[in-house]
Length: 340
Ligand code: SF4
Image (cartoon, rainbow, N blue to C red; front, side):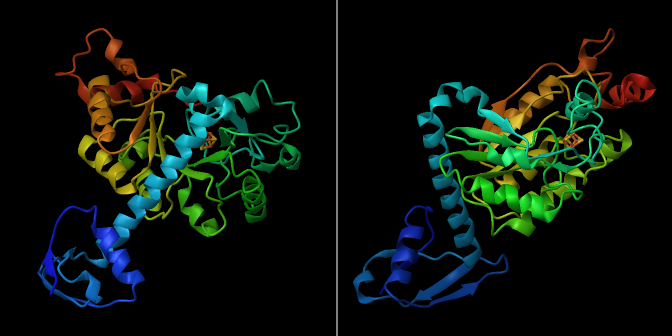
């Protein structure tokens, strides 16, 4: 007879896997209203007699497996990074950028890449037609030795204007460098699903989610990309061990909800940073961002980028108690919020 109980997660996986490996068996579970087991009967091989077992629901077991996959992928990631020649620069994480696809249709108000492409680089082959999605086959001659490569920092590889074939060629090329991690970042993470069976394990699948506030996003016409809530849902349902979220440039948010989103997504790493280009975005006050940073640090690796007071916090007469977000938004509407 086995004793049945609920207890710490470690041990659960070990015992359940052992039972499964030995060819067993069935767990009969009487569930309560909350879906949890109230009582259970387990048939297991003889050698388990006298052992303690824990009853877990399938869903709980799946969550546990995902967590274990994530932890082992993280271990590989950091071990490869720390042992790479560029590991000394780990504080910057990304060792180089690679642009097999450039251009983007999302039109974010703060986009430095579009600004660069349409000014300094406007007469180059890549940007003569503007900041439109374009495949650069010459980039598939590049080689990589180690570190983390940021893919397409001059565009969005998963924008709807990018052909499936281009994405497939990039993914296939990434698989040729198993000792290098490739960081993908998009504002259209729903499209990851279409290629999920094709990404090699050295892929880090990332999404930018600057806020949890769709209304704020629309009100300030931040971007034509899928709304933050859409990106959140896509990343939450994405089953991949190395997920990454960039909260950059950070926009105002609801602390509880935004932290909850990030917990649901379960990224192994999060970037957080304010806008670097004085775009007068609807930013959160520094104190609020620090609270979010503390919340996120409870469950993920947080990389702090530019962390500073919001642009309006330095304005004469600003007071956290009396001004707050609505006044900041009002200042933005009065023309401080510049469109690129
Ligand atoms: S998604 Fe990225 S590349 Fe595209 S417009 Fe926005 S900031 Fe620029």
